[in-house]
Length: 292
Ligand code: NDP
Image 1 (cartoon, rainbow, N blue to C red):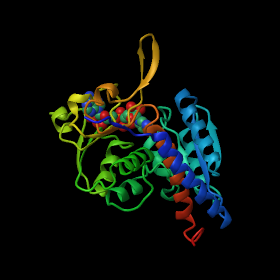
Image 2 (cartoon, helix red, strand yellow):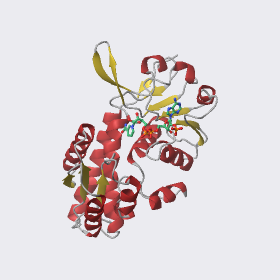
Image 3 (tube, rainbow, N blue to C red):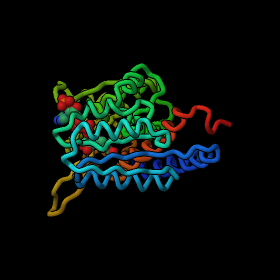
Image 4 (cartoon, rainbow, N blue to C red):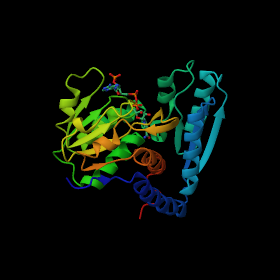
């Protein structure tokens, strides 16, 4: 077998960010300065890192960012009030509420409060419904990034059999909807699926979004499969802590035609697509701005 292609998410993300940066300049020339509000409740260390990275990337492509850091004991009503204020603020185009929220806050109520036009995470029911109808709506960033990696790697996806492992609202389900829209034959498997490995072995494309370190190995893969590893799992190994995906990378190399590494695969694309969505949201709110 030939050496598998390593899908470089960092390079792909840099291309997307450069594209966004150019479009931001054009929009600013037309009098519209895209802005993203990031809301963080509490002090979860991982969430703090994610928010910092999102703010940095926004600045790099010329998108104004506004951080709203609220204490962990913030009442749900106060968070909802902030979201309503941001919904009504014409100078804010995207609103991102960093998840997870503290346990006393109803996550779905908060996500539903974000205006669908400013919903850069694509989690509002109106956007979820729109995606499932195959419309062009604000779409969750991680699966949108995975789709771009697949298109860059495979070209046309029509007729390919894609197996998505995982059915979460954040990754698995929107990934399946996007692949269907790209004319793939889609199978979604999850923790209650029978014959997981056999189903996976039929796939031209495998997207693993499970949260189980190295679950998928060469035995799960048809020779020539393209593998997108969404998983980010911290494990202790050889006396140190490291990040690994849902795919056993070294083993998968035996069968995969192309594969994303962890880190450096899907992760950078998620943030790049957040910027792309912020730009799209600004356009949705000002349809006439920046048109040639
Ligand atoms: P969830 O925990 O919400 O969903 C996991 C899914 O995997 C569920 O549908 C679950 O099934 C399924 N599952 C769990 N165990 C198994 C198993 N043994 N066999 C088959 N299916 C199984 O996770 P997320 O979708 O939010 O995230 C998945 C992974 O992706 C995590 O590692 C997360 O850290 C990472 N992630 C990475 C991002 C990035 O930017 N790179 C962004 C978002 C997530 P069931 O529904 O039956 O419980």
